[in-house]
Image 1 (cartoon, rainbow, N blue to C red):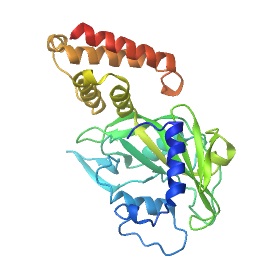
Image 2 (cartoon, rainbow, N blue to C red; image 1 turned 90 degrees about the horizontal axis):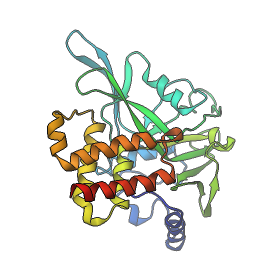
Image 3 (cartoon, rainbow, N blue to C red; image 1 turned 180 degrees about the horizontal axis):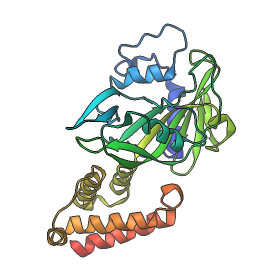
Length: 303
C-alpha cells in the first residue's frame, strides 16, 4: 500500500464522484460479501470487522491475553481487529494503549503485523464519552515475545481514522481522517477532503477508529519507492533485515555480518535511521534525503 499523497487523495475523490460509488456498489461486492445493506446506519467498527474477513491478504494484527504458568502460559481471551481498547479513556492515545496492555492478565498483539486497527471505548455506558484524546503520530504497541508472556514494544505510525459525530454509533455522522505525506485531511461524503489539525477538538473528542502501520514496514516501503529499481535486490535485503529486527530475531556472528555486504549495509543504514529519527519518531525531510543519498553511496561501495 503506497503512502497517500495529496494528488492521490484528490484523484480518489474525483473518481468516486464520477462513478457514484457507494458502499453497496457492485464493484465492492467482494469486499462487502456477507454484509446486508438495510438502509439503516450501523456501527463502523462492526462493518470494519465484517469486511476484514473478505480481505485475507491484508496483514492485520490480532490480540490475546496471556497468564504465565509454571510451564509456559495460558490464553484467557483473544480477538481480531479492530482491537477494542477496553480501558478507561485517557488524555492521550499512547496512555490508552498502555492501560489496555497493563491489565491482568496482560493484553498484547500476537505478532507485529503490518497494520493495527484500534477502536476507542467511547460508547460504553448510557451515553457517549466525548472526552478529548490527544493523538500522537508515532505510537508503541505491545507484542508478545514468541511463546512467552514477556512483551516487546513496536513502533507504529498513525495513518488514518474514523470520526463519529453523534451520541450513538447507529446514528449521527461519520467522517474519515486521512494522513498524506505531510498533512492530515478530513473527508466528508461528497465534499472534497479538507486539510485539518490532527488535534483539533472536533477530532480528539470524536475519533472512534484508528489505522496504524508498523514503522519498519513504512521504512521498507520508503526504500521500495525512493531507491532506483536497479537496486531492487539490495532493497529486498534491507526489507528482510528490517523484518528480522522487527520480529526480534538476532543476527549471529559479527564476521559473517561484515562479509555479507547487503546485511552490513542494512545494519549501518538501520543504525543511521535510528540516529535521525526526530520528534515523535517522524523522519524530517532533510534527513530522508540524506538517508537516501548515503544509502545509494553505500550500495555503490558494496557493489
